[in-house]
Image (cartoon, rainbow, N blue to C red; front, side, top):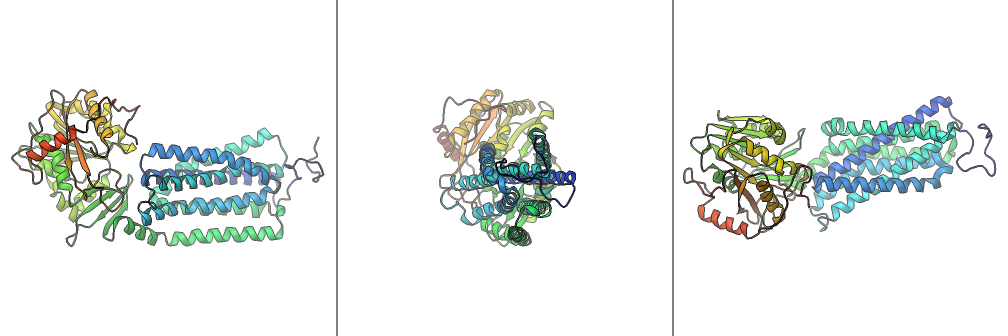
Length: 546
């Protein structure tokens, strides 16, 4: 039997060097180590979620990015755990060093990623590869450091009091998983809404370095040499000072980065419960641009061409009651209200902050023709899919789906067979559904997948497109300064449940940019891009990624 109070001796296992000289009772020491596990686990999960959130914001396709980040991080944790075996003989010093580096890397990760995005634009010419490489690099580094924590903490808790390995592992993992739960809840409900991504990451790094430094320097200082204690103290204070100084400057950094991304004429920048909203221009003759989560959603120069093409072909026929899904900016409603005979326009918008901005911002309200001041307009806020499930059947003559691109993972359910089945139910006999389906020229498979999905839902779609030009705005993941590549277009589908609806431009009111000739020509151009044999997209099998 091993005497737990015996000093280290030749031939003893490297994991046992005798009990640590603690300034507190062993039971208190074990509690403090488990508390350190709890805090470090919470910080580690916040770093992971921060990278996932940034990936979905900067690169899109959140399912793919989250899968890559989490897979790389879990793999790296295994490698870090193996590598930590070399530090078991100096567990206290090793754990202190790991926490210093982890706090620095994890705490600064959000700011570094956003800075590279803001000031390089195309990530150094490696669009599609540069962002992923940088994210994978941070995921790998953070995963290695997180993986090294548990073996070293296991060693430290055994240094307090030698015990059965199974019990020690159970205690450590319990504290680790509970800490991960707290970190996972704190990120979306506290850090992100109240502090934002940058300050939240910096604060997490500060908590991380304080917790790690306090555990080693306060509890296991006897395991370090005098020089080692001073080095660790200086390193902890340096990282803490760096994170604190960065936090003080984070507002100036955000303003500078925002101007680098959106230009110098940012008027409104706010983080709602749903997304980041940025409004630029709209005064002194500058065109108004609206960005949602970095995507250009409205370009004052070109929005009329888009909204006229989306709305007017659908208004041929009965149109007393019109449902607009999305379109919280009020621009689709503006075009609907131009038609005589409209008695009600019902807008269903996910983000109430967008509706509030469309009502109250003078430039945006002027652009939408003060649509929200019209007594015929009423608004519901919430998820369009869930709202449609409760909507009365056969209640709308026209449904206009003014929604983000189907290629964005979060909106895939709004382009599913189930969603179009709900849309078919709310349409009256002879009613029409107008769908924005993303660019035709650059993403024909996505566009024709939407068409196949409409047909699978029992609707008869008529495809068409409208050329946007080299400076057109993109309703998908366009993150530069609002300029899309040459050849950009907008693809639309007009569908009905009884028969394929004709594509006609109304003569009253006459659109300013859309003519029957251009609509017919663009419909033929869209038909030439057809991709046949595509399956429908469903909730359990979305087919728009990539």
